[in-house]
Every structure is written in structure tokens, then in C-alpha cells.
Amino acid sequence: MATRNNAASVIIKRKKVVKSDGHHGGAWKVAYADFVTAMMAFFMLMWLLNATTEKQRKGIADYFSPTIPINRISGGGDGAFGGDSVFAEDQMAQMGKGATAQQPSHQRQAKGKQSAKDAKDTETAKLEQVASALEQELTARSGDSMVSPQTARHIVTRVTDEGLIIEFFDLEDEPLFVGDTAQPTAITKEVAAMLTRVFGRVENGVALNGHVRAYPEMLKENPVWDLSTKRAQALRIVLEESGLPRTRTQRVTGFADRKLMVKNPMAARNNRMELILLRSDQ
Image (cartoon, rainbow, N blue to C red; front, side):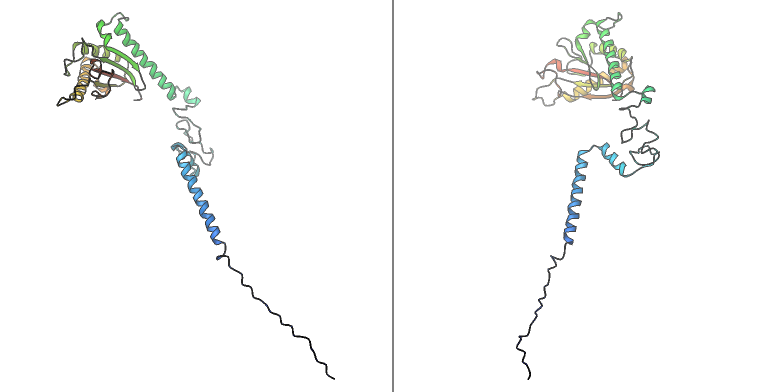
């Protein structure tokens, strides 16, 4: 007798799962990271350019462009001398070795070369010697003064970064020029002759500045600019006639009434001439 299978059939259902591609994969993250890195490098470069000096930037550039040791402008690199230049005695390399006028080596000092500070001190001492000689001329302490006792009342001196400034000015009873003209008086010629003798001790260049008092604003033609310039030129001519070589005059300038010496703009004290014995490096 045949048996009947009453077991239910088993149905297996397979579900197909489709995974997402994650917004086309993670390639965009790599690109974004590269972009952020490049931006950081860019801002670092901008900061370095702003925070370093020209010499430091030159040293950085030389580091990434190694030069051969015999290059006079080598700032670093590889090679037999480790980046040093064979001309280190003549020029300081960017890595801080070598020598310059500001940082002389022991060998250069042995040769008599001075640093910038020592040279400036030497120049200042020389100018002070000229100022002392000028004082002797004015006070007749040298025993052979050829100027009148009244001359010293017109003159003041001072040593500055520009050089030795000798200022001589009008007094109420003794002007340097006739009236409102550029014609020098006897006192101006006397001062010029004395200064020429003193300046003969050195060979520094000379600069001349002319200053005048202020004039009323209601004048149709204010003469301050022309007058200050003409007086400076007149002083140059008097100095040259007294024996100062023409080649020593470096500049002649008129400042009008723009640099007053006293509060009263029309005071005679503002009529003055400045004769500057320039430093050798000017």
C-alpha cells in the first residue's frame, strides 16, 4: 500500500542585499586632505616671509639651492667645506661664519681693519678734535688767534650722527648779512676765514644750510626760500675765496623759515647758517 507524504515543502528565499557605494568611495577625503595640507604649507610660507629679514630669507633660499664652495655668495650647502666659502674672510656667509666690517674676524682685526662701531668712534673723536681746535681759535688759547673777541658770540657747535655742526647766527647788533640781502658782512667773512683754517686739519666733505626768520604773511612775495638759498650760496663763495677747496662742498641747501631756533618766528636768532663737517661715510 502506498504511503502519502504529508510534509510541507520547504521554500528557501534568498534576499539580495545591495551595499551603498558610500558616496562614490573615500577618494574625496584624500583630495580634501591634500588641499588642507597645501593650504597649511601656503600659510606657513606667508608667515615665514613676513617674520624673517631679507638676510634670513637669503640664507633659507641658499639652503635649498646648494652652491659650490668657491661661490663668493654661498650661504650654505654641501661640499668639501660644508657650505663655507673660500672667501669667508672677505664676506660673511649666511650661516653666520666668515667676516664683515660689522663682525670682523680675528685675522681682519690683526690687519688693522675696524668694525663699524670702532670706525664711528674714531670718526667722532676726530670731529671732537676739530671742535676743540675751533674753540681755541675763538678763545685765543692757542696764542695766535686771528679773530675778534666778538666772533665767539655768534657760534655754537655740536657733534651729531651727520657730523660736526658749526652754527653761526645773527645778533641784534651784529647781523651776518646786510639787511634782507645775501651780501655777507665783515663778521661773516671773518668766521669763514677762521673755519677754513680749522677745516684744513681734515679732509671731510662740507655741507651748508641756510636758515632765515619768518616774514609777515601779508607780503605779496615771501622771500624766505630764495633768501635762505642765496645766503647759503654766498657763504660757499666766501669759504672758497678763503681757501676751502671747491671739491669739498657736498651740498648747499636753503631751509627758509621751516626750522626755527626760537619760539618767536621773527626773531633775529632764526637768521643763521649751518656749516657741517660731514663724517667720512656720509
